[in-house]
Image (tube, rainbow, N blue to C red; front, side, top):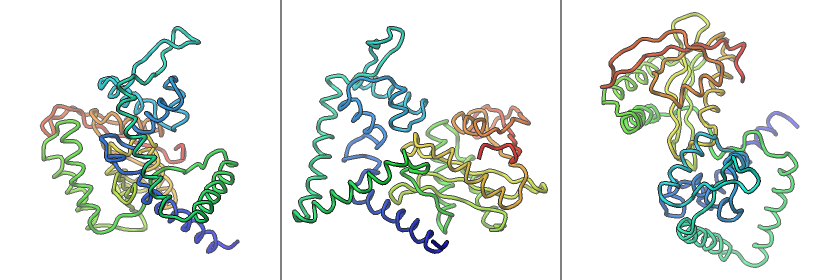
Length: 317
């Protein structure tokens, strides 16, 4: 098989993935016209159909980050949808159990899901329905042999196009304004970073990626020149709330590392603050080291500016 053949086949699989997720609508932020995201509905499904289970099992079976699942569970507990009960096998442990109220809330979602799939099938004749089911069985059989695809995430990455940097600027301002209470000066700073990146863009040494789910932008990251020989800047990392729990932030950082190595960089450097805890966890997991910290008052808050650095020869990806 030639490289061209492989590229064409990869493109065909990715095209099918995008088509199918659009067709069944599983990646809508409000799944089945509800207030729940896809990830939240998957958690409810597991508890409704497979009974009570420990958080660790949900993390494993759904491929979720433990911290992200913990936030979902806290939300569900607050709404009275789930509760923690002593484990039947280990009194020191707790398992998650759906409450009666949770079942009342979940049942309309489950019914809507069955109805939507039934409506999709009803548009096909008997023979075509059987062909579809057979094709699905073939896909499960072939891919099931691999014990899971390494990159089987519900998102795709692409390089930036006109309009993306404006989106990055706006969403950084909105996101951190809502999450951390930062004022408009942060959005202005991101806008300046994006303007400088676009004005001086060198495609051989710089790259910006956008993550999409069902055609909607849900994340970003960039590699930029730092002015120091052999050192690149990691910039503009953002993961929208509905895209969390899939390892998107980690994937974006890994993509930067791969590009930086190929471009000849020997190290990565980044700026963040002590308030951006989720991003800091990703950086630390990749081997970044804190090399400088300075207390400041910025974006309407007291915080610490931080500089982190990574030797690419020791990076995990």
